[in-house]
Length: 523
Image: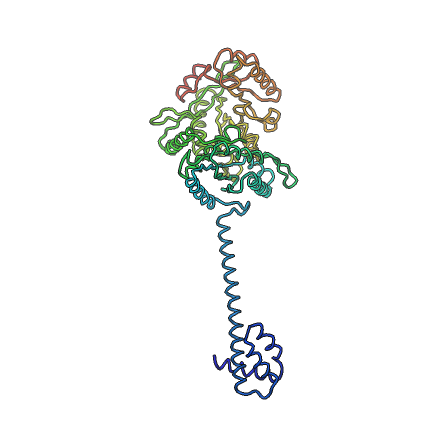
């Protein structure tokens, strides 16, 4: 090191003698704050000649100090830059880990932290805390029709509107998809939580102008309150989720508070789901068949296959209780496939023994249209590739046709091409029109039982049934009336010219063997 400094000193002295470092020395040393005496010595040494040993030593000290200060400054700048880069990197990593990249709202991780912190504050201050869970109504249709880019823009705008509807201390987070949560703190009255929910609903009801499209959506909100409903943070989110689904079931675009009855429903659903998973293995499902009568001839021409669950401890469980759970859980695929297999096999037996033209209608869930594994080469529905049985009628809901996608439309065309007929179940409960259904070449319209059951006492339902039958016939549809329970209802439907009927007045659903005996008696 000393040899290096001596070499540098000699170079500096030589440069000084040649007057090349005058400006450097004069300018650099004051900046570095060297003492006035050293300045004078150095300046004197630069202007005098020759330079003696003492002057050389002074120059050596100053040069050494200059180099030390220079490299120290460089090292400090480097450390500072590295520290700044490290802090920026840590901040960026923390932001990515805690915020949603699309909306810049807190994500599920940060939401959980803020929920725990909010509960601690509520405990300290003796306040309540509300958790609101929002799910957008109709967002899937926006994505399907306008594309995911527009859907992302909509989510960003939704996030901003929700934030603008809240107080500064409230927290809004995006859990994923089209689900958002809001934590409302520092409020002692439950009625104040309702005001927040109403403000959010009103804000989202306003139209969105995106990519030259005017978009209308709404939201369903579930509300749960700490500590009134529970003291467990995880249970709070479950409660809010249950309340949100209750809001959707009430027609959407509204809010619902969590209740203890909802908790009982949750526990019941969990138990049913657990039992359902073993029901197929234990052969607990049965298919019963309800005769469909040709009203003009009183002959049994068709039947509807209806699933029954014979629970080992609870007995026969109504499909109204377990079918929604089956669809939500995804079990509709194996159970639906099982039902189609058994109904198709039974149909062949009936056709061989009684009537080659006999038909059985089988309910198909919209979920079964959406699963690609049910289609060979993603083209044909599983009921075509696996069960191309003559006499099968597929019953679908109005909602499936209303939410029509290219995938569903292609499957309906495949069904038609393979000689399988289709029926719209529970017609009149949705928002489709007969004219709209005409373009899908539907074969049967099934009038919902809610209209049939009231035709004796309700003039409006009488008129509706009459209009449906007349218009359906003009458009080429056959009509099946569901839920016939009295002779007066049957007589009125006969008078209208309704083609077919089913209901408890004609026959309840029958086990396979009993059904065979029934049709033998009515041949």
